[in-house]
Each structure stands twice: as structure tokens, then as C-alpha cells.
Amino acid sequence: MTTVVSVAHTGITVRSLETAAAFWVGALGAEVERRFVLDGAFAADVTGVAGARISAAVLVLGGHRIELLEYLEPAGRQHLEPRPNDLGSWHLALDVTDLDRTVARCGEHGWRLAGAIGTMTTGPRAGTRFAYLHDRDGATLELIQGVARTP
Image (cartoon, rainbow, N blue to C red; front, side, top):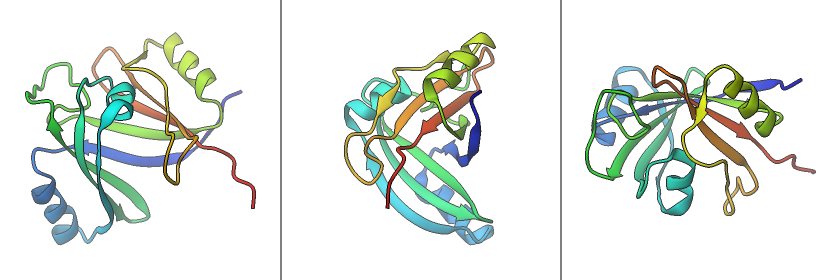
């Protein structure tokens, strides 16, 4: 049986990364863990958004990570049937022990892959696998299967 390990983060697509970060930090006391830009094939393949270029910040609030995402590219936003780059879009990320099995199980309940299952090839999370899924209402779920590390 597939087991969800933990909630990894909550991602929120925003109009302005600077404005949103100022709110979370200034009004709520979140701490900025890191900022980065994500682009290239990995970003597009996993999110299903061709040409995705994302300016992002990871904040920590109450022990939970909030990922703020400002899509620099592609242009164009909508609120109907939201995609990961649309304003107001959100996703819940879950750590899982068996990504393929979990994707299949979600499919049995009407969830579909947004793009391809992707494997990060560089950086500290190299080997980690990711999948974005959508339900019929447009909600987005991210599944993450980390690589077991030996000491």
C-alpha cells in the first residue's frame, strides 16, 4: 500500500512575488528560506506549462513551508480551470513512498497528470521524482518521491 509520508509544502501562484513575500513575512512572521528561478525542460515537463519560467520563494511559517510562485513566462493568466501558472492557483504537495503507484491510485479517482513525471537531475534533490496532477475541478496535487540517502 502507498503511504503518504508528510505534507511537503503549500504552493501559491501569485501576481507579484515581492508583494506576496512582503505580506507573508511582514504580516504573518514567515521567514524566507530561499529564493530561486526555475526554468527549462524540467519546469515545463513537470508542470505541463510550456516555456515555464518561475521566480519563487520558499517561506517557513509555523514549521510549514509556503512556496510562492510568480510565473515570469508564459504570458497570460486565467481563473477558469486553473493551470499551475494561473492567479489564484494552488497545489498541495505530498511526500509519497511510491510515486507511480500513487499516480495510478489518483487516476482511479479522476485525477490526471498535468505533464510528465519528472526526475530532478541536478542539485541537492537530484534523483527526486515529481508529478503534478489535476482533478476535474482544476485542483492541483504535487506528488514527490525522494531518494533514500545513506549516511
